[in-house]
Picture 1: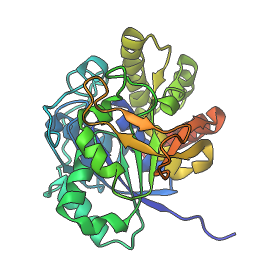
Picture 2: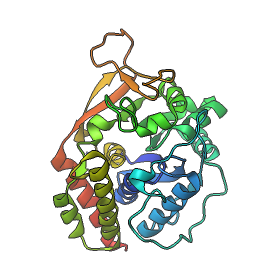
Picture 3: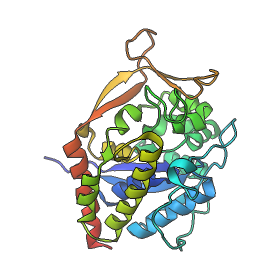
Picture 4: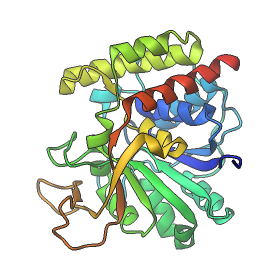
Length: 316
């Protein structure tokens, strides 16, 4: 057997408890090469999500991974944040010092464009927040579109968590989502139907706690805060680590099951703005444009998480 391919990825995120765990998963698994992190307004304002990304890099020892700050506002609408879920900082719970790591001297959109244009078409974009940066990059330099290997995103679903119809990431900037979903780039979507199944239960959290080093302790603190807010707001008994599913897919796609379906983004509805309109029955006759993740192998998913977090013990 030949050597396994290492997948180059850029995580575009709004940390965010589950974004932080996604970064940690990418930072220690040798099957992905995290070439950069870009930040966007979403769970909190972009200044806060950028500081959070820097903090995660510091605790993980990812000091050479560039972090570029991106869009502070959606393309069209007013900014909305998710303080009820993630706290005012966007990553409440763990108490971490202010980072010493500096942000890149380049806007996130320009970083994405530069990396893609210089690539061999082998970079996967992993947006785990609103799609503002990705849409802006596509509009500023359309030549990047055929250079994107794949976009693996967290967002959407057949249900909503911000409105009855819409998931937060898509709702916050549905116009940007529409640009991305209609770009023709291969898309894999991890919506709420899937990510609500990736819940870190108290039992899972205990397994992570037993790893017993600074990174695993940080993850447990993230999960405890996140689980509490999800219990208060949605009645969940665990913490759904939505965004980590995207990185897990980049590492081992066999963890998940999918269907290729047509997905449209609703931008005009009075009650349905931000909805991912998923043609589950094929009634539109439109060609499938999205690989929609629908289920996961729980054992494989959590084994990957535990094994990867354990790797940090050698370096922290």
